[in-house]
Amino acid sequence: MDNSSDRNRVIQDELQEIKNKLNSLIKESTILTCNTELVQVRIRLTKHKQIVASIQFPANYPHDVLLVEFKSKTISEKILDTLLNLCNSEFKKHKGQKQILYLLHFVHQFIVNNPLCICADEVRHLKNNIVDAQRGDWIKIKQKSSTILLRFQQQRYYIETKLAIPHHYPVACATAEITSTNFPELLKKTLSGFCEEIARKCVEKPLKPNPKDPPFIPQPSLQPVTDYIVNFCRKHAIAKCPICKKLALPENPSQIVTDIEHDSYVERVYCDHLFHYGCLDKHMKKPPFTGGKKCPACSKRIYHDRWKISARTAEDRWAHEQARKRELDEVIDFLS
Image 1 (cartoon, helix red, strand yellow):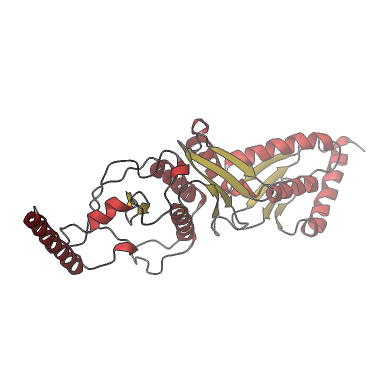
Image 2 (cartoon, rainbow, N blue to C red; image 1 turned 45 degrees about the vertical axis):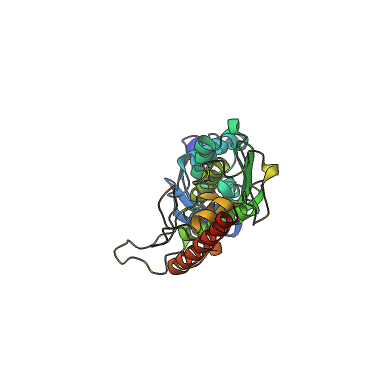
């Protein structure tokens, strides 16, 4: 039997084996094309974790390795190139043997064992553009648990977070857990709440969508969440109180004030500026009150649960305090 007929026999046997065994070996696979010219198989774990393998038999098959191309609308080209290089290295061990089922099993396991492949571009953005080792930042990738560990630092303040990437990402959103920080508890709770809300908005359509907007499509949430965390860290660690112009937080985190009535206790207002409680309290109790008190830094109205009174009430209280002050001044003048 010549090499050509031997090759054809091997290929025909392998094609039949693919048709008979592939779906039982890899339940997430679909045969698109299966003939001597081309074998195409889709491996689909989720809507976004899917790869199409296009396979051709070389002239000297099975003594030469398969000709393979990977395509995906959702997995980055760099990941596909990495997968192809790994496959080519593995094929060398299987020269002279049937290779397609082994190849498809290898591809399937690659997707299963690398769940973060679906957000590879976002992770690359983090590594190349966000994480700054000179500041003390770091990133750790945990493929097995599909998590990303991050630390952002600004001077002596830091935030460490664990981001979990769900199986159906990006249709399901990433979740951020603040595992450690030396920012005040108030700011930690604020950060956690905003991370959750930012991630939710990426995957849930608005309750009252604008009829002129295009149909809602879930968006990746990892980058928006991490962008917010790093900006939060960089900004608030060196933020100045808009009234006294001094650092809102002490340079040494161990000196953070936790007494909510202390003048140096840090309050965050709706516009995201930080104030010293003493500065903000004085500001909120001085006129003008019409239209609500404004933030000196951005001119937006200040909203805060500790100062929830109407302009009329605030004005009446201020007038009452001024009257008492005048009375005390008159008494002092009389006694002196």
